Image (cartoon, rainbow, N blue to C red; front, side):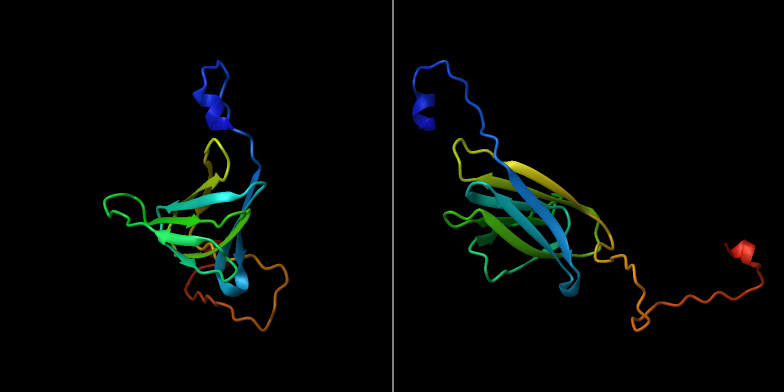
Length: 159
């Protein structure tokens, strides 16, 4: 219907429909991975991941999307270019990933299966030590690091 109305001689205005897309990047501490969850109110056509840091994508068994990796030219800042092509009527996609100790950005380009085609962009900053988490209840059985300072200085000088 959209294509027919844009090809006719009309003075209509073309607009992009407002689609709600929710996305969340969460740390799964026990597995030391991040889970990216994307959910749309309509079917998702494809999701492109682009990053300037090295990211390892991990297969999710229940994912019906097909992933394809693209070559990253060393002269560009890209270290990850991957496309997830979703099956028909897929409105939720879950991606597991690991990243190292680099600082950078993960950009996600989400294209819903709607006319006219429009891509929604989300960006996540990637920080060093991103696998570290705060604990609220100290457990004496957990291993800890110890720092011992010895020398001829006072506590006030040390602080």
